Length: 259
Image (cartoon, rainbow, N blue to C red; front, top):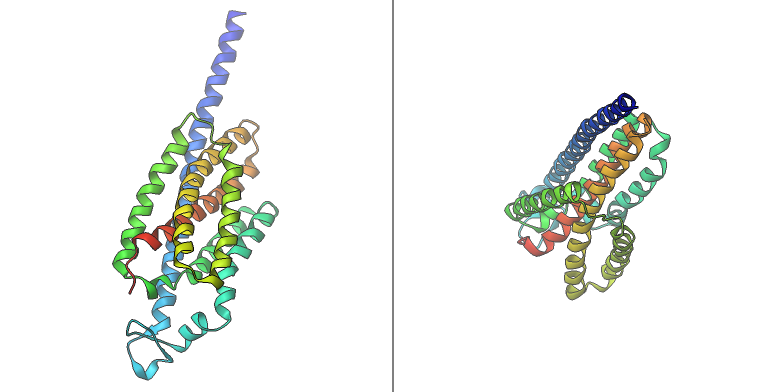
């Protein structure tokens, strides 16, 4: 009996060690995919904004308030109804991606995530026209530091954060509704409130999503569900990517210096 119990404890210990090692590899993959998405978004936003403005009056189609001029592409992107398509396309895409993620292969899922990241870059390219490059970089660094701390907390804390999920998602829905309303109201006070609440909500989601990704991995790894684990890394990267991007955009309203 003692030998049986020792063998059972040894087997459990080996399985636990394998899950721990797999979890570290899984989280590294999640953060790696997220980082690639961030690079694609930044590159797309910078490239599009560079094509949208010019200092050459001969190539300009419209004058900006800060002395620079929009090209034909800039006018198309930022002053025509196409801007509404660009603004809401990432939101539509992410819902569609989430709905079909489990029906596509691992490679196709990663390709869709990278496509979404490029599309998001197109959607937020206007920040390079509205804010100084230094303030964008400064805000990005501040967001990265906050994200790292919050994600580390979510990964290491013993506190169960699952109760925050419903509350935070309701907050996100409320934010989206308020932002759509403010598109028409153009209220600075409302925008300030939206930004402040947005930072808090996505800060909470960063910790919550990190813990959720960790717990989901442990639960499925114990049952050997390898196909789900391979796909879940992409979905986890998408969740943390969205937390980072939204926290960055809301912080930019506070920290960014406008052109």
